[in-house]
Amino acid sequence: MAANVLLGVNQGLAWSMTVNMKIDLVGPRNRGLAMGLNEAAGYMAVGATALATGYLAAAYGLRPVPELIGVAYAAAGLALSVLVIRDTAAHVAAETATYPGPGQEAAATRPGPGRDTAPTRPGPAPGTAIAPRKPFSMIFLDASWRNRSLRGASQAGLVNNLNDGLTWGVFPLLFASRGLGLAGIGLIKGVYPLLWGAGQLLTGRLADTLGRKPLIVAGMLVQAAAFPAALALPSRPLLAGLASAALLGAGTAMVYPALIAAVADHTHPSWRAQALGAYRFWRDLGYAIGAVIAGLVAGAFGLSAAVVAGGALTLLSGLLAARWIADNHSR
Image 1 (tube, rainbow, N blue to C red):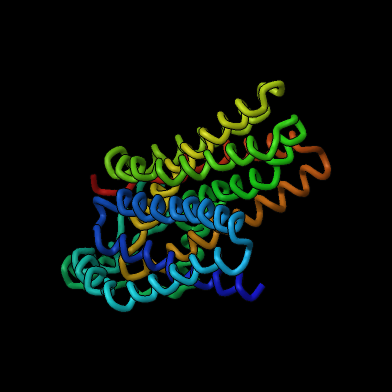
Image 2 (image 1 turned 45 degrees about the vertical axis):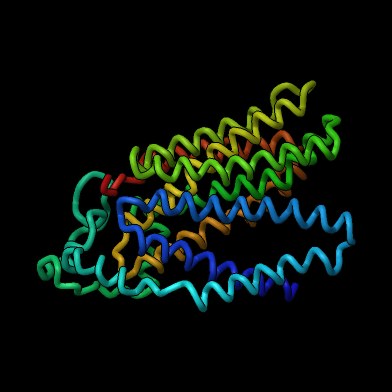
């Protein structure tokens, strides 16, 4: 438990700051690409490390050899953060200076279709570098509900990770009940994160060129299709499982970098990091909610019902994203 607490704190600090710093460095036009690279590096490293530690555990036992990789990672990360990485506060200040005054701080706050916040009095002319100050409680409310685009992104992120928690709990049991062995189940669960991680190398750039909203909506619909695919072909569970995993991985790769970039598009640089923190709170809460839903629904109605529930929630989330999110980035 203590080890997991420390790992969770590290995740909240280190990975969150890599997201914020990459967005600071690349500017509005390349946020999708930056997030695709960041998330792909992270999840591909997770997969590679899982393979490496599994091999080492099989060859040398659970302790201490597999844990030495973690020690090496921690030492390398600390050294890089101290010796190589430079703070990006100057980039934020430079970007803030190009924004309009507090009364005109972003397109998401101007009246018009898909916008829900009325403008205040006009502020100073662009270039004055006067940043609007907002308490975190207001930022959290904006990211969670009051701003339609941020609301749409937060719910889509939550449901996206809900899928992950649900599939980890349900799919192994579902395919085992259909006669699939451990090797086949492991292959299905490996395809999903592999496509999720590697696919973001492409989808991040597409989010910059095609727009955030098309990737988000299409990705959620692709994920929704993965659930009925898992229930199809009961006599060929491996084929059904691989098809479902491929759809889940491709859909998640489409939405992951696009959602983070969309949140950045609809926030002011001076409070963007806090809004991203609120978004990632809702997104990562989806893991726990998905696991709870999987247990409750599967326990009461069976494994197939839990799969159907996951598909229905994902489809609804995609429709809400299409209704609420407004594309607001510079191509």
